[in-house]
Length: 343
Image (cartoon, rainbow, N blue to C red; front, side, top):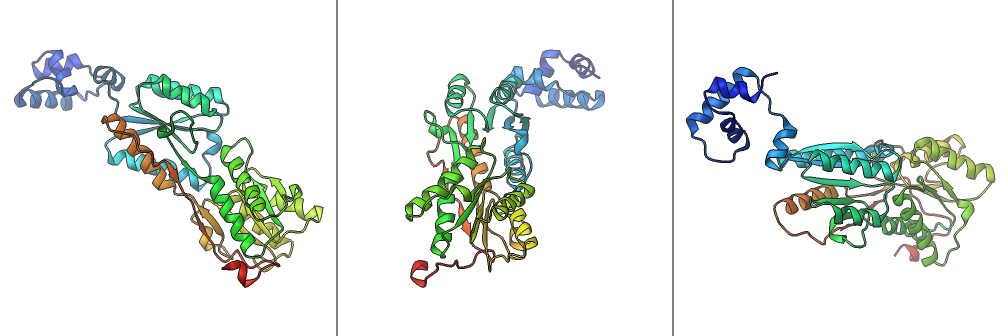
């Protein structure tokens, strides 16, 4: 591997001059720059990125911490791919680091990105508390943005979706279509999103003077298999229900398969709604109704905020994003439907 000194010797300049050419700092004539770049090409020299970062205080990289248990599924595929595309359009690179399985490991991942010299850090937390994330923002001078959690102290440093509100709206839509016995399949309850969606479901029932039937709430694990297992639990218990709200589309797909195997038609006998609006949702038979989170818009905004902070700009307070309920063929009128309710 060639060195900066070899480049300097071949170009007939000092090592300091090569450094100035690479960093873009200080005056160097165009003729000398051409000599240096020619020498770099001839020697195959590649600058040490970490050394350059230390010299320039810029890495042109943004770090993203995501827990590995969240990697699967369309939602996170879209989040990561959109982040990479958006940063690439701004001449920056995305560095993805695994937050693993605990708050301590998420903290380690953040510290790693900070020590690596990333210009900014985006956190999609699962285990870190809100107070801890507020403390992290206080600790680091470089820009930090949090996705999918509402902070208390640093509200301008977070972008989040109103999962509780979107679950409320989806549940209320089923109630307005004449459903009263609505089953709810949660995600893993160590997930803030799962807890918020469960809260929205309960809130909607209360708002419509309907009791929360704990027997109709079954815990899932975000997978199609867990959705199918949840329906098996309800069917084996003989608990009647005319609609199912599953906390993501993968579980909703498992729900539809298990209902079909049991000879229960969707939506004639049971209506089904999921969350995340995965690409296959409209192509299922019946087409799956779903709550669409504005993932691309959220990613664009969080990166805009990071870049604004890097450029000395101001943070926006438009940090709450609203989901959209897409009712498709998997939802039908329930046993208590009256035309007046639908108005």
